Amino acid sequence: QVQLVESGGGLVQAGGSLRLSCAASGRSFSTYAMGWFRQAPGKEREFVAAISWSGLSTYYTDSVKGRFTVSRDNAKNMVYLQMNSLKPEDTAVYYCAAAVHGSTRSPQSEYDYWGQGTQVTVSS
Image (cartoon, rainbow, N blue to C red; front, side, top):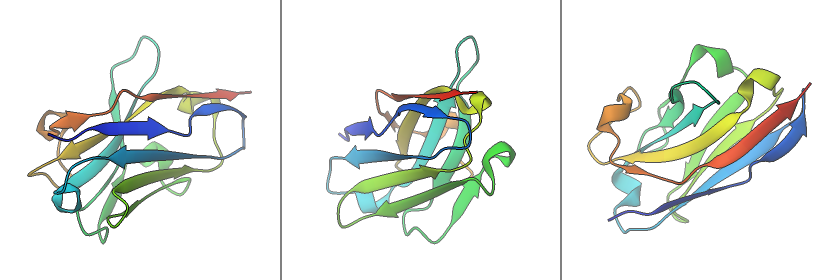
């Protein structure tokens, strides 16, 4: 069983930055692909970014490329999402997720464990 706890959300002005963190329990964390997803009010949850178990491979949705950076520290069981140049359309609840047998290109259905989410609000 893996537990994921996100933190770092908040209210920020457009153009600002936030760093989300995801703390994971479990001894096999370093073998899992990890992803970040978000869900805006009235919209379906969507993929944001993913990182391979080694950290050597990353993948982003087009709307965040060049602005967001996903990283991980397997020694600390942590995954991060650095978000720069934030826009009002980035406002959403952000979730981290773990894919036991997945990769950076795995669809949502292949993620096995999910956190509770952290709210990110970007004001214009």
